[in-house]
Image (tube, rainbow, N blue to C red; front, side, top):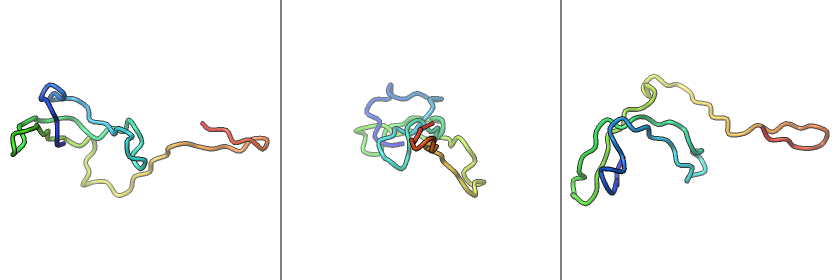
Length: 79
């Protein structure tokens, strides 16, 4: 995780989640936990090592359901 302005903005053990700023990644999905925070090579910001929430090397498929639409009496109902 790059471009942390201040080391107080993130702490070891903090949970890293998606922000929702990109439409393909809905808000609130857990990415992992911060393991370590250190100065960036240029020294103008900080960077963090993130431990993935799941063993990424073991994943074969991922299914993300964002919303479910149900047709009921001609109306679309979001759940």
